[in-house]
Figure 1 (tube, protein in one colour):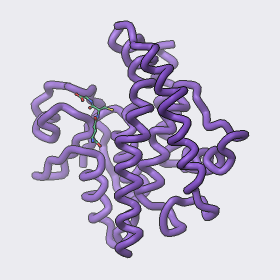
Figure 2 (cartoon, helix red, strand yellow):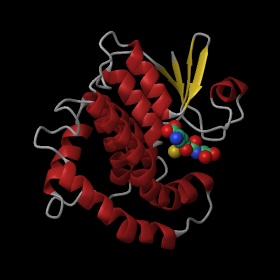
Figure 3 (cartoon, helix red, strand yellow):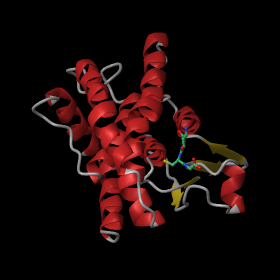
Length: 214
Ligand SMILES: N[C@@H](CCC(=O)N[C@@H](CS)C(=O)NCC(=O)O)C(=O)O
């Protein structure tokens, strides 16, 4: 099974961590967003990463890919069957992909992707506004919902945790750790999530890659 994309994208990282947590073997095919490679475009017609190929199946979108990977697991490991838990997992996944990474993308694109990879000037005013105006209320809300169990839903690891933790890795790359004085529960939660081997292995590779562009 192949997953196309770069794990610097929180969406690709999410799909790769989901696969690893489920014990599924996948080959990550490094692919930049917008690549015109026909094999990739068959999986992701609009050029967004990640894409997936499993035999005859091609698929894109990290949430669709995560649902597929989870369904391959005999016990459906990361998406609970209980209706309320299942719906809450979908909400956290949606929140992470849109609200949380909407703020994160404005920082990551303008401070890292634009200047380092595209060699163009990023919109630093947009990045600053995202950091100082968009992000704080999002972190305040997360602080209020992180549970004492250390997981967001059902007191165990679910897709919700992987989806929500993934954009925080982009914030780490930006040098914006969760402030443990203002958001102690969230800082602890994110710290534990990114130490899981499935995240840690990817993060080490991403840091080594980014260091080459320092
Ligand atoms: N909802 C999609 C979002 C995927 C996405 O927007 N990926 C970005 C990279 S972080 C991308 O490929 N952008 C290129 C583009 O929009 O053309 C998912 O969850 O996979």
